[in-house]
Figure 1: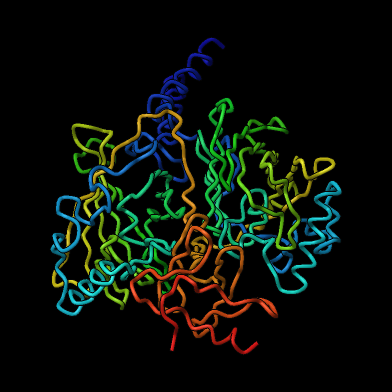
Figure 2 (figure 1 turned 30 degrees about the vertical axis):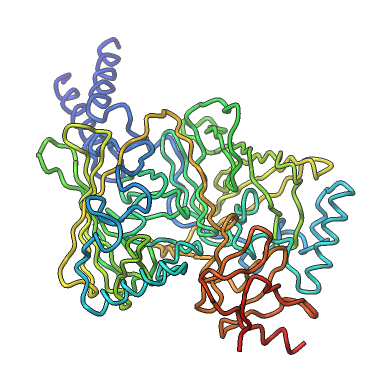
Length: 279
Length: 281
């Protein structure tokens, strides 16, 4: 009798511990808690941190989009913003936000993994509940992400999060040089996120971009390091309050320290004030 | 009897060894999953949904800030929205953001409860790890929040999250009528969040604001309704993309649908173009 009760009790315990149903078993997932920061890249944070900023990135662009990049670089050299919308506090969107300009937190739950960025307070929801792509996918700069946990080494604990992201809005670029993505916003981004095998405080993100602005898929690996603070400081990076760049129509201007409109480029024409002249 | 206790302990040890210590025991926390929207409807854009917008809110302001509030209302009446920083894409800040004008998600984890609101892409971290208040923190629009779970009915499951928030950055107002908080940024917000006892689809947030612009603490309850959807739709709200306003110096200007600058009020002077060395043809 006692043996039967014991067997029943063990079975009950196993049922609670199995992870089936709604219970979240944190021991099955990697420990990605804490604050993550970018490794490498330096100022300007080029998309491929292993290559020089600007033309040195050697993005596999089609001739049409290579011309757009060169025009953007020329405009930036003249003082303009080129295709870069960061200057006017537009969200970086995917995949550029994974450049990790400030800090990142990853919150893992049973159904979703949240990637929380300090820059622009961007939030990514990666659905890991086994869902299919929705027929009427909401379009966004962050995109719609579906993820899958993989136990690569078969030790009973997930070690890789594979993510695919679609459903974009634009315009999006890859870094401050403004390597452009296609205006059709049909980008597909595949990520493999995992801890370094020898250093759990280093995380790797292999990002492959499939985009009609490219002649081939482009894979780049980003590295992130975990901050050492037990209670990290999370700063809001509110771009707008200190921003000195404005976009009027399609023209980029600046606000001077004394609060006046000023040109961003040499010989730039002032904005059209026709609606003021009518008064 | 001793055998039963041993058996119980065995089960407990087995459970603990299999699940590990860091696991979130979801049975101890309330189910606040899903998407929450403002229960009083988006049209009720005033801080206290039970009272009329504007002066009808009857905020217990000290005379100096009551005068500022009335001046803000007069400006609004002639189309000047300077008292509402959100029109310039400045985040709603605490406590206004808890009106949840746009959808909200609450993610409960053992050490932190995350409150994510689409408005201004707000992320609140409510630390529930038992930490003490830090000596100093850089003010932010979301503020710094420390929370404590309470089991008020002692049924073994937490039902109320009590939160205190400090170090909130201005400028901020309670709602779009421009009810001001004190400029000293010393406001303290206390919240008590719990499910409605008779309707678990409703979440109540009793918010008490203690602020030097008020003659006494001001308590208002915000209510949120859970959206019935297994896969709710989350949208991005990019204020800078949608904004039709530009601030140049101390003046707000509009942006017309043709991308040209337009005045926001009758007789508004055009921007000073002294830094341009050529005139537009």
